[in-house]
Image 1 (cartoon, rainbow, N blue to C red):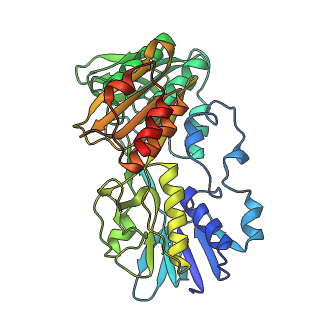
Image 2: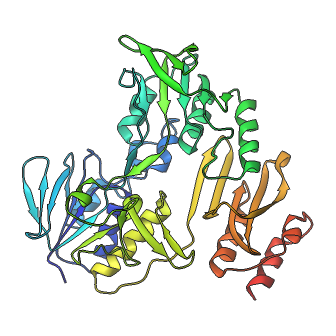
Image 3: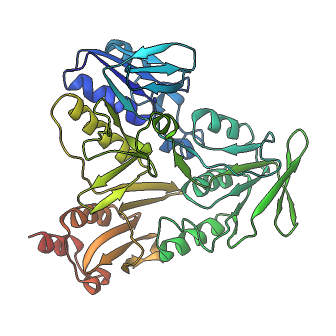
Length: 410
């Protein structure tokens, strides 16, 4: 059993690792090093209830701050891990100090993909990844303020939903022809585009790229590649995230769209593990390697890492799932699309409760459920089992999805 475990990063995955280690009986020194001033917290509410002012700061925390002191977990916050010395088993920190480790867990997460364009650093240009980011955005949330959102993915649309409800004039710019194009089916995209427009969002798809942001002491306008200018008061950019792999790569660890780990969250270094958004890991259920940006993955890989560190390894292989809250719509997705599947829609989009089932050679591979938790739950079971269903039966609104699932799993 290691005497000292250091966790680099203080996000959800880091917090869950510490919790699982103490629950599993680890009694050695446990240190979490994180750049932010806050203890490990949940990120999904940032662009939803926290942005809307419907959730207090402390409710974001994975555990109250006093929990860590009570469990003898040292929090080194407002501090970054700058380098790893694998031979000496030491990490160098941004405050000039060093920490020795027996085992190191990299929970460095991901960081926003930035737009490199003139005016991109003006006051009023925002990204959304942290508590501080949200607080900066909230300062400009005044009724009537003109908000430009660049990107119609999860973050962009969640911010749009909160902002238009708060009385802002919201314009979303997306260079491709549909919303959430990277993660949902065209049928789901079309439904959400209608919902946002009905709520008052000026949604511009296949839009010319924004190439310049103008202003002096603050943002005044966005300018596209055609030279057209639109006056605005604030910008939120949501064009995805990238895995934070810099210190791992500098230490010579294999990185390929994330830090490469095995099914036990182990890197090629026997004393270094990696978890969460920053990892590229195998999934036996899906038959390949992938990198996931989700709370579910962060939490479950943290538990896997704790098992590995405790000498009780359990392979990580679960069906991924994700969710997004926009207005009164809950989108729940399970599975990973390959891009060549057939699809059927179960339910009527006009009812604002339906699901899209994907089929890969007869097997259910993905389910997108909108205000339809039953379809989401059966989808997870079907995908995990590699079960086949008749697409026509799934699409039949008179069919009993639970009965179909039970027969497929029998």
